[in-house]
Amino acid sequence: MNYKYIAMAVILIVFLFETFMQYLEIKSADREIPENVKDVYDKASYAKWLAYHKEKTRLAFFRHIITYVITFVMIGLNIHAQLLDLFGIEGDYAAGNMVLILDGLVFLTALFAFEYVDTMGIEQKYGFNRTTKKTFLIDQLKNLIINLVITCGILSLFIFVHRALGNWFLPVFVGIMLVFLLVLVIISPFMGRIFNKFTPLPDGELRERLCALLSENGCTVKEIKVMDASKRSSKANAYFSGLGKTKTIVLYDTLLELMTDDEIVAVFAHEMGHNKHRDTLKLYGINMLHIVIYVLIAWVLVSRPEIYAYFGFSGLNYGYAFLLLTSVCLAFLSPFLGLLSGVLIRRCEYAADRFAAENGYGEALISGLKVLSKDSFVCLSPHPLVVKLTYDHPTMSQRIEAIEACMSQRKHS
Ligand SMILES: [Zn+2]
Image (tube, rainbow, N blue to C red; front, side):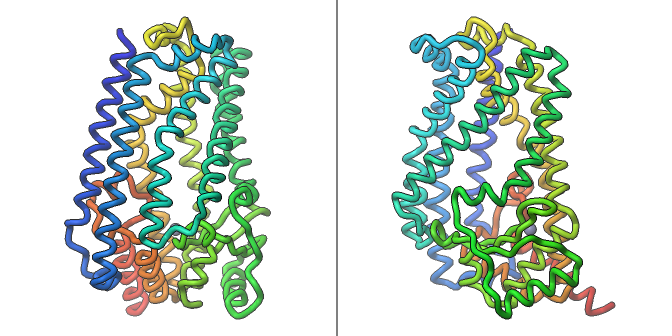
């Protein structure tokens, strides 16, 4: 069995599938806008949105092509193994981590231009970008370093546990990853500080209303904070982060700029709904399931050292196993996993919207959602297949329809 041919065939299938999805995204602009969101854009802003969507999808398409050309060349010509030979790197830890570092650097350099054009070109042109070149460069660097530290850290731990325990590593490593994931959730409010500044929401009517809503629902939150999102982008959002005692609600400063107090309280009520339904825990459950699947596949990959000869290595390379896991196995599985978790996450979104509507914020939530869609140039008529496979939220039109249904039910009962 030639593993290289199998890997390349799988990548080709994934490539064709993703190309098709991108085509559907480009074509989404031609689809008719649903009646209940027709008033989001006026004529001028719709024309602007169309131009924006066209430029964004075109850039994404080129990026997609380049990514796959590089992937094919790197795998087809055994570039990873050749680079290791060139630098004379050996040993499980050094060779494994070096494969990841080299791969990360190749893709960062190749795709840097796309990131740059996206943020400093398109987002800038349409008035979303507020990043300076300096912040952009520092962000890119911070992202690369954080990513490499996390992936190399996990890989080194994996190598250590696998070499120490053999096949017994499977349950032990799954256990370690689950704890690691939990720690990540708990420290996420602190991680955010690497990129942004957070200040407490100042006293006043808005804060009082939010606190009242919190205590009415028996919800304990450590802090309501405002994040300086406007440093990077004018796009607005709000979210809960942390777990238990570290739980914090974060409002983007852009949200406060754009919305009326009623709309902010409504968006906040939606987030409260997530909190009330313990959606962070559900998400953790989904992630746990994914991790078990990943580790199982990793186990198969490291149990067959003969695979790596086809890619130019003399034996098992842990870093390359990681790449095969992510860019071949998971790339192939992710539409299926996405389909599953998408169903669950969309259900959580509907339930959070319903929670806000049942608390009397339906009307304000609808107008808040419209402000958000207009503000972040959301596609109002995405292709249903794209929504099913790649969206984690329902479309604006679907959400508004569900909120309205909930409101009329409340009226009648
Ligand atoms: Zn939500």
